[in-house]
Length: 472
Image (tube, rainbow, N blue to C red; front, side, top):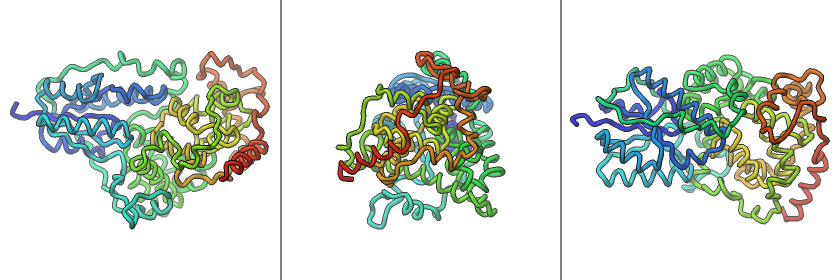
């Protein structure tokens, strides 16, 4: 073949603009063959993330077809499938965007070495982050373990300008065979919840760009205040799209910088949140144990409850703790696939401190339920809340979910939107919760709203007693 194609191995980068690997492939002038491989890491995804990934794949298929291209789908071990595609197409290069979780790093390292050994150019590119983890160091050459110094180290660094989208992808003379996306049944674990969550999804690159533009135009000016008010649409919502690379962090950063230069007060807070995401990824890269173990080893002896079938834990999962802020946030999760950030802090604090339950149980549950699931952010968020992680909330800071509701939802607009029991005219969203949850829970809007499984003041005292007895 005089002009062998380049394989673009897609994973969590379903966009055309600001896509360094795709941009480099097009720059070669060779035909470009986009590929997605359903391998073990995809199989391991929770119900909601896997379903949302399937939607992203379907959407990106259509985007590529609009450029005269295709998305080739294969299932199996990544190295095996890439080798087969190299043999079938005559490709001499494979490009991809880097991922940073331990499983992906191990897989990609093996793939790169094996392909290079058979004479195939295997090249990885940035694009998922603004700063590669090995490029941000303290003065002593270590990595940052506290957020504020990390922010100070990167806030004035140059961030690459976003790359433009290609107007056309060069196609090969013939396409390799592709599997049928529908045959993968990526929605099966969502069961009836898929139909409830689907209207709340903002799918694909175009929707992500529109979401960013609307946020910058309408909400970023007051973001520093409204981001904590769960009844107000005051956040960007972009975590859903960032998690699958339907928009890049570079694009969000430059939009935030422009807003700051225009004098929009909340823009810097938005930029800090983007850097918080980076911080989580850098920590995952340098200390991958954050995904599986207490980041602070002295928490290993803490007497967490590890029984996820305990009655109080089941009540937490069901949004039936009797604590309105916790329950409203959990129900928002089941109906929308996402949860307001203030709600995430409250439900995590309640599980790990009031219920003294291991953060791993919450981490695993979110991994099943979030359409914006992200391995680094999920792990760091849970360990931050529990007190066992880097730059964590101190053990003695136990959020009072009742006073937090008074502070951030004083008129109960958020709680009333999501809790139906005891209401003569519950909202459609509150009723949707009963359509989304498993039938096996046997819950109804006609049920009586429960008394607290652990009262706010009681839970705080129990938590502090446990911490003091362990010498914290």
